[in-house]
Length: 323
Image (tube, rainbow, N blue to C red; front, side):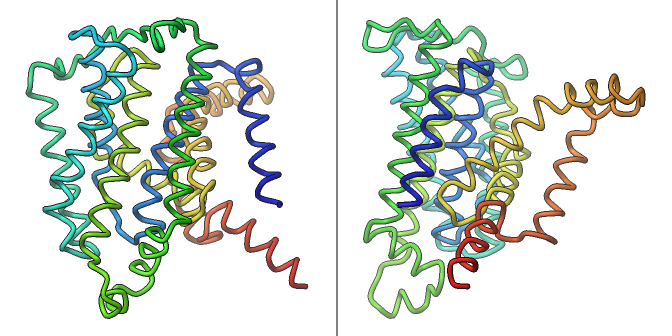
C-alpha cells in the first residue's frame, strides 16, 4: 500500500512538473532516469557491471536521429529503429562478453563500447565531432504536433513510464527471480539447472533495448545527437546515478539520475545565486567544478550510505517498523 501511495504521489508530481519547471530540462531528466533504470536492471538485479552502456544510449540516438532527419520517417518509426539498433548491439556485445565475470566482463564491455565510440567518430552518418543536428520531432501518429514542448513532455513521460513499468514487471516475474538468484549465487543457479548464460544474455539485451529507448527519445527531445552520448564517461556517470539513488531498488536510479543531471545543469546557477547572496566570488566558479562535486557525492555514497538514498531510507523504514 505504501508503494502504491508513493507511485501515485510521484505521478502527480511529474504530471504537474512542466507547469513549474522548464519542460525540455525535465524531459532530459526523465530520459536519463530511464537510462539509469535500464542499467540498474543489469547491475542491481543480475549482478553484471557494464562499463559500456553509453554505447546503447548513443547508438539509438544516432539511429533515431538519422531516421527522422535524413530518411524522413515518422516519430514512432525513428524511436522503434533506435530501440532495435540498441538491442542488436546489445546482442552482439552480450554474446562476446557474457561468458566472462567480474572485472573481465566490465573491461570487455568498455572495450567494445570504445569501438562504438570510434565508429561514431569516423562514419559519415554521425557527422563526427559536429554531431547529428536538426533532428525533427514530427508528429505522434500523424496527429499530435510534438514541436510543442508541453505535448512532447507528456509523450516522453508516457514512454518513460512504459519503460519503467516493463522493468518492474520483469523484476517481479519468474524471469526476474532467476536473475536475482544468479546475482546472489551463480553456481547454485547452475546446479538448479538454469542456463545462466542465456538468462544473462536476455537481461543484457533487454537492458540495452531500454537504454536505447531512453537514447532515441532524448535525441528527439533535444534535436541533436553528439559523441558525448557514446563516450565512456557517460557510462561512468550512469554508474554514479545508480549508486547515489540506490542500486537494486526500483526508484533509486531515477532519483539518482535526477540529482546528477540537476547538478550538471544547475550547479552554475546555484553558485551564482550564492555569490550574489554572500558576496563571495568563489561560489561563482561552482559551475566549473561539477566533476569535483559529483566525485565528492560518490565518495560520500561509498563511505556513508552504501545502499544509496532510497536504499538507506527503505532500510530505516523497515527498522522503525520492526521496533
